[in-house]
Length: 231
Image: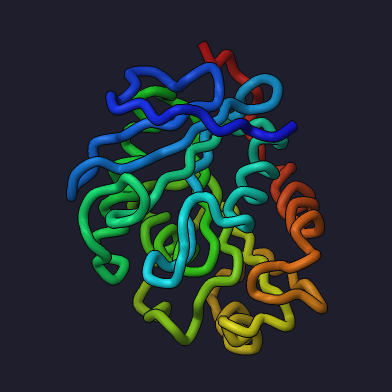
């Protein structure tokens, strides 16, 4: 079952929509364009998903982002994607990961307001994985998913790493992110995340999107909290 696109609402919802919805949230640099979908079945928490680099065509409609969203929704999480500042209907301008971190914090704050007490998972692809990783600890994420983290392109060594369950998925034939840099980085971490290496897989998971969906669901299913009433 796929989430359907919906007409953009210009007012911030005061509750999590019961149907797939698109709307504007208040962000630190102006409005942020967001899209939500309720979990399939009883809600087990919330997932906020971040997209790849805004200056290289990254948006919340990226196919890898949408397959991550689908996997998490099928696991039973309410999902929330959004466009970083300067993309789509989101206001502001690219800020090298710093302002985008504040965008994520604002979206996470709204998620917690409308789903108080719910587990909060963070997920990201490429640049989006850098943003969720650098903020997972301060946002007290309950789980983290980083797909094709751009090690070597951004500063990873100074990031305060989370202590929650953490999955890294990396294609072995990634032409944008050097896979070996990712593997070496994971190996030297004091507390290593779960690493899924996907052979014959490019950066955008061409012909491997369903495999990515399955990898996320298989790796993260065991960390789901108990289902709760989402009303």
